[in-house]
Length: 70
Length: 201
Image (cartoon, rainbow over all chains, first blue to last red):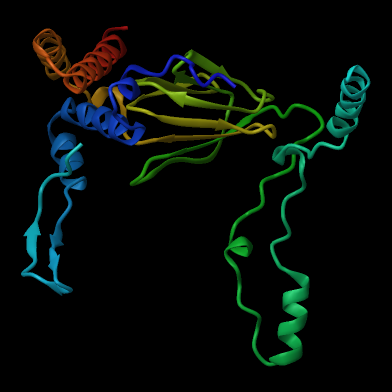
């Protein structure tokens, strides 16, 4: 088994395949023509609420609606 | 010591002969477990036994003995199914090892895709999509599953944005310091040059 096989450049710099794939997809979406571009970018928006826990109790949750980061 | 070595060598071929078959050669798993349904009907004769996920799935068609005339393609994206069991003559996929043409009867292969153009040939019509990345699984029974994260028909791409992006990432590569930045800039260059050649080629 080739365990020292040439790895792709993105894995050599510590990036995982999912990160690479998401970056490629975002770049392609940014090159779309207008109505399709806003559709694609809005399809990928996420909304989530995060609450940190300390001493077994949740603190006040924060609502985030970032566009997904790579 | 030499006698032990020759005994071990003699033993290997026997093990290889009893090796397990590849999963592609096995018959499809039965969709209902007979022992479970019998036990169920014994205890609860009035209710139907519950369906398992396997019974909702269609089993993969077996590998025919002669090469079929059409390739069946399933092309899926995370948010939509572009082609579902569509019978075509050929697809050309942008694998990392180069443009790969898939005809009916292609050997079973798993290939990783690089950003590039996927073309579906059916009769005299060709439909092209630009695929950002993904995988293609070609099964021995002439079924091809293409999964991509983002795939757009070429006419939805804007040439000016592509060229602007290419220039931007080329300059980012020269100004990049950490490995990660260099990798990101390189990815940008790869994707934009693939987009460029898809639109101009």
